[in-house]
Amino acid sequence: MASHRLIQHVGKKYGLRVSEGLYDELNVYYFVDGHALNDRPKLAKVAHECLQKLVNGNSNGGPFAEIMTENEILNFLHSNKGRKEIEHALSALQQMGVHGIPKFIIEGRRMVDGAAHSSVYVDIFREIEQSGQVFGAPVFADILGISSELIERGSHTRDGLEAA
Image (cartoon, rainbow, N blue to C red; front, side, top):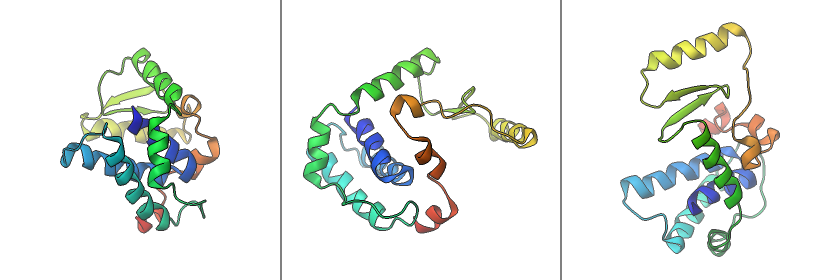
């Protein structure tokens, strides 16, 4: 849970592009390299190194305050900050019937398994395109305390992708 809390905190502090980058890095750290996410000192070190790369190279979202130090990250990991939000998100997922990942929730109402054939996604996005508008809103923004400004700024803009 500590790594989930950290990713949400980073998203609020530095933007979604940075939190997505940290998420990707931690997935490699855990799934590819085989490190434990519950080793908080190591997690703080990896997260700090990742933030240095992502925030210093950020062209999407403007200047930030100083990058969290390794010690600040470790203190955050040892705290309970953000725990309630993550627990509420987990509860919401269970109520929606989500028991495994990856799972995509599109327009706040359509749930698709990550292993679904690409044609399923194409059909959904074509329907949205034809309707001319997106219905619904981000499912977890309120639960996780993510501002609409942060969501509107996005995580995968053309500038952000070119900078990454």
